[in-house]
Length: 424
Ligand code: GDP
Ligand code: IMO
Ligand code: MG
Image 1 (cartoon, protein in one colour):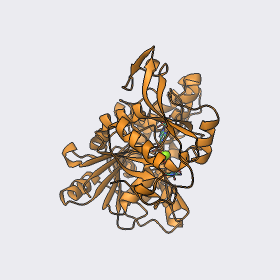
Image 2: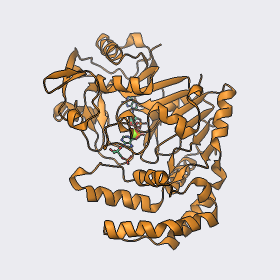
Image 3: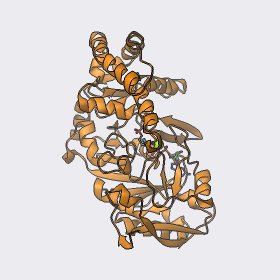
């Protein structure tokens, strides 16, 4: 298995955690390269559910080294809670490393995320309120705190004292919020720094050496292509680069070291948060998909908006990420519907367009052009071979391949590790 990048091909929550857990069984390294605890990746093994936000989804395998790369923003409190959760379930094996250059999500980032969302009023983004945007803002503004600073007590204290008065002015004077106490932050977070120090090192060396030694490396994408800061549905995006190109920056590797890019999509479309969603289903079918697919956010518990599979979006993801194959999850959720639809193009002001528009004004006026398929029926969740899927399900998957211009390598028929069918 060469080095593989796994990315979300839609708006996140495509079942990346499940696929990464499956690939991790043969991986030496699993590496997160962007995002933070806004991610919520679910793994189900023998009816046990694990929800991970920061720790890579390879952690269930004792011999797999899990790396939180330089491009991730790390909330130390959430990370320690996650480590404790795994320890309490006898999982955590200390095969975890955090890059010294990764930035730290501080309490003022979380407060500013909440306050700026309130201030936006009706134009809110619908963030996860995990402090992600404000932390990346500080990184770009060069006032962030990195893990190497965080675990050095004196430098950390000095940085917090330098930064806090400016943050408190914004909290109080711009947003009318309550200022934070620097002494309390320094005390609490110095304690977290002590606990996390043993995991911190230059992980770019481990990743480079592993690839050079022909080891199996999986790069775990968080969020999805349409949440990318550059190519996503801006401003309704996250503040990092969940696309395959983001891996090079966020893991500190060159593009020549990546062999495969696998895009994960659902057999339909979901999104949490605000912003245009052309194939969104507001009535009974949308509710049925939400219920059958348990479409509620892993991080925030918010109901996910549901709609038909949008091939315009996934085709765009194939191009932007240079995908070598697609994994289509949650096919089982569509079973029992009389008809199923794929959006193959949009109608915009009377014209048919086949490319995903950059302008959100245009996107919000796009009307989907659908191809309709006969539904498939019965419980498909125990099927192990592609040939055994109902004929109508295979027709649907083949149409996805045709419309997206990319082969499907795996199909998900249930949340368990074992419920995935290899197509090739
Ligand atoms: P991620 O953020 O991309 O890792 O996805 P989430 O974990 O947020 O959401 C995906 C949800 O779908 C989780 O509850 C998974 O357990 C579940 N899931 C993944 N693949 C399948 C599948 O093929 N069928 C069904 N029914 N559920 C799945
Ligand atoms: P995983 O890795 C789905 C969405 C939020 C919001 C926007 C910005 O589980 O697929 P942020 O808190 O990042 O500033 O919020 O991005 N969002 C996600 N949606 N899955 C995710 O992660 C997400 N991470 C962020 O809902 O619309
Ligand atoms: Mg998720």
